[in-house]
Image (cartoon, rainbow, N blue to C red):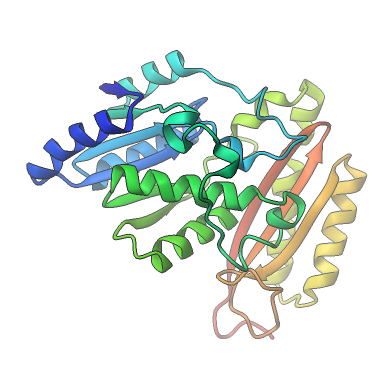
Length: 288
């Protein structure tokens, strides 16, 4: 595996592969590589001749009171895991390499609509940071495909919209959420959970599954279903940020005529912010 920290080195290495006719896939990460990242890399390797992983803890997507300084940085371990799983190029740039000397005043990217709701409402500026760094990474690497986990479903839709509207040739590929055996979505932040919190954490996914089962059985009062789910999470010890049932593509509140839905949730368990989602597709014969 080739490992570089300079954009110019990555571009030179990629130019050789591109001139040889190799398709290029990119897996953007913030490091602390886990099974979810490796699933993205596996999909990338299946579909592209050349696999690239980026590791960059992006300061612009963290709020002032969030965990940027404590976010796990495990570059040496990550490098070993990626090499063992077939990554060909690891790009791990510094903040100044990505943004220059003054990240806070560098050019930023905003995706209207999708950036303001759900996680965007409770984390102001977060999705501008995501959109900005993704735009730069797509420009640096120029991949044929880029792979994002569907655990961050709102982020996935935002990146799809960004790539389409800014005219990137890159295809944005969503990969299903990797979960622990008890259903908890795998995330770097799960390491923050205490043992007691870790035992409670799967309740979030079980709640989404219970709501999905009610919808499949014909329930259509989505506001009531979400409210009841939120009450259950609060009783279980979660501090709810949001639990919403939405149209799966617009993320607007779902209506009775909608057939493609997503249940989105974010909640604090102790000091750890957990997010999850579950998509529900209703066939045309489902009760309205």
